[in-house]
Image (cartoon, rainbow, N blue to C red; front, side, top):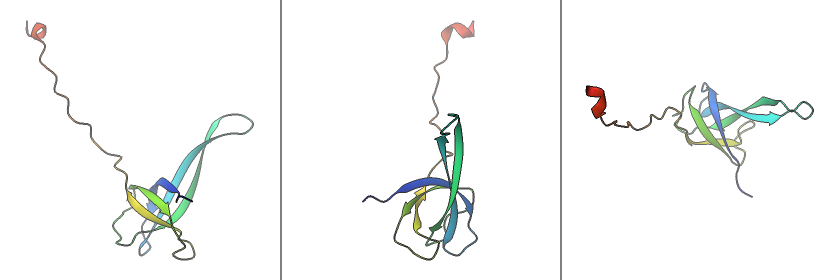
Length: 96
């Protein structure tokens, strides 16, 4: 069976080799049909203490590491990627 991979925001990095990741998902309400947000916090293993609070990361399901930790951090998700700069050609009619 494949391992589950989730994406979420780190809300705490105070534990040694542990981060708490808040994973949010959107579901449709059964009766009213409105889209609502559900969130859950997962304790994930961070071996090198390299991930900090506020970063968006991907976590992967693993065998139990401790009482609460059954997930490990895979990598960072670059949410602040800047698009490549697009050069516009000067318009000849605008210089009149």
